Image (cartoon, rainbow over all chains, first blue to last red; front, side, top):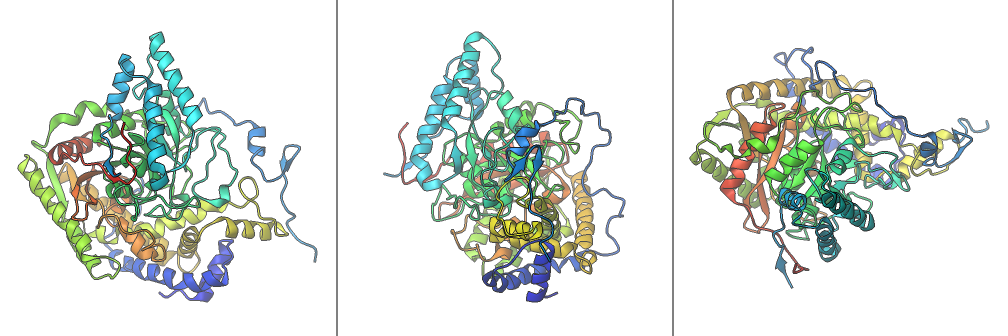
Amino acid sequence: MALTPDEVYRIARLARLELTPEEAERFPPQLAELVGYVDRLAQFDDAESAEPGFPVSREPEETTVDRTRLETLPRRRILDQAPESREGFFIVPEVRGGD
Amino acid sequence: MATETPHPRTAVEIAEAIRRGDLSAEAVVERSLERAGAVEPTVHAFVEIHADEALERARAVDEAVERGDDPGPLAGVPVAIKDNLSREGWPLTCGSRILEGYEAAFSATAVERLEAAGAVLLGRTNLDEFAMGSSTETSVHGPTKNPWDSSRVPGGSSGGSAAAVASGVVPLALGSDTGGSVRQPAALCGVVGLKPTRGRVSRSGLVAFAPSLDAVGPLAGNVADAARALNVVAGADGRDATTDPRPVPRLEDHLETGFGGLRVGVVEEMDHQLAELQDLDDFETAGLESVRRDFADALDRVGAAGAEVVSVSVPHVRAALAAYAVVANAEASTQLARFDGMRYGRRVAAGTVDETLRASRTEGFGAEVKRRILLGTFALSVGYADAYYQRAENVRRELRRQLETALETVDVLLAPAVPEPAFPLGERLERPLAMALSDVFTTPASLAGLPAVAVPSGLSEDGLPLSVQWIGRAFEECTLLRAARAFEGLTAFTRRPTLEQGVAI
């Protein structure tokens, strides 16, 4: 499965990234090489694979973990990290520009 | 003048001496700082050393000892933390421009537990940006060098932590391991690197890369130190619902049992994996051969020491890296969506929210992070998700089943940690597949959530560290570390790197 430059642009848009012209030239062959390697998964994914119900990660069976003492971070501490904040709100750019 | 790194005391020795009142924590930290002053210009393991705070905490430990209070099992031990682990009040960069100016509002649970145990945090270590890499070259702070050969990489993404221990600045460091990021740099730097079982150590305060794979683990100069560090940080945590409630046994108590009666499995397919790499231009035959020879030698020694060495088959190890590349990057594309310049970090104003978001991310992320987000987004996108993400998850499930089956017939698996010794800086930066192949042997245990540890085994002809990897059953770090300790006893790997700027202490 080859990854064309057009597809890379499309994916970049989905991922909210912009590629420089240099990256748009550099990335596609690198990604294509990786995707080419990853294509070997097809040989290994067969009917004998473990049942879908088999848990992928080991999650604990019972949660006897104490979650009663969870603290809340002070709002000021969080807002101090913001590029812009005012009166307890994050200030962000407007969603739409003018038409 | 080149001098061999002085053989420092171990973390356990330091803590015990401080607890007895035979050693001052302040003196230990001063020594670490002096050591850092001498080697850091070459090695660059640290993003930042917090010297004043460290000395202050060391003095507090000394005062506690004087009062007769219990200063904790890691009393006065200087420790470094990877800069993707939060420490309240300290910057947290993840090696990225996008978190410029960010200061942690709380400490990671693992970090909190270290400090509660009396450890003195010396500073934050360098890493590949957002823990994505195997060489610690993609950090916005510049690369870390391998203390054994400063023209070579220390491995990654916890390269700073590995180098800080290997160069003798600290006896202990914390790293994070997603596909091998504790074990691989440990192997390349000749130190012990432990990835615990999935759920053993809280991930609260660890900046997420791939949540189903991420693990916090210690790097140390020896197995006993790693065992104590794991005991300090491990255990259920209310802030991380994926932690396991079962208690952690005292791992140090079981270390000296030796190999007698232990059944050690060797995965036959791993030899094919080494052979496969031979065909690639990126991999030098000499490097692959040195690993093969060292591993064969390790098997002989382990057998001679009383273990029963058995061949096992785990066919899906040959698909592990491929499955990992899909799953990890798919999760990363989701986890990194939060970095948008809106609530924290660097904002690049560009008009509307969408334009600002794009500009902030584009300017804030480095090339490797972008490549991985692209790959992950691709693997999850409509039309490709079945062929890539779903398929990778199927393979992962089957790999785990095969590994657990193999570990029913043997107690531990012995494998190479990495396919070759440390490679030169710059060589693989624009070769992402070759870079990823460093993780062929570490990704299986990551995908299956099994505990695994890299232990140094020897030196290559070029004087570079070689290592093996032990892989254990889930939650059986006892048996795993017993094997690791027994192996450490066989190799007596006490060599330290020779640095251009030695310091006599």
